[in-house]
Image (tube, rainbow, N blue to C red; front, side, top):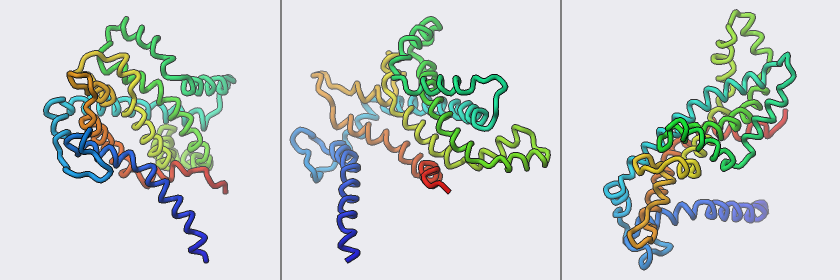
Length: 274
């Protein structure tokens, strides 16, 4: 009887998994079919790596991979260094001047505003500085978008660390930086893992600022490169696009798998109140 009652639950779960994974499967099918307009089907027929080889040999896909990796890692490191520090100060310290709430509202405002809002000011600043068509504007834009997310996300984790732990470290003679780096940060590793993968995905898949600040093909990131994979007849090369999209998923999947344990703990933290 219990198994019969649980059957709809498992059927629904399987349906959700199929619904979520089918786009990935379909992209893989298109990437491995020679002629996507006549041969493609739900079950792949003649599997070929022609499109995968083509995007590396003819489209120089390795360069956008390097550009995206450089932009993502550079912005992620800066965001984590400053975001974690700001979140710790805002979450664990009190200010003599009562502007903490105002500061938090401004940080949240930057996050909730549409990214296009900052495009024109950033474009004017980067143009005056002569930095257009480089990676610097994209890195700065990614920092602008992801930094508020890191601060707000990590403040909750720093709030959850008991103050007694910090007081014990101070009694033992630890400096404020030692308390932050050696005592508090290890306790919030699940949150750091979760916000790392979220920020990584946001930067890795970002398209808007790339198309605004980059004109040279040598500086293209992966989303921008995939958007320009057109033939001379202006027909989209679906096999190449699918191959490039599937390859671009691999770094994100590897990062998620590597941080899986901490990621699950971080995303579910606070779900149960003790």
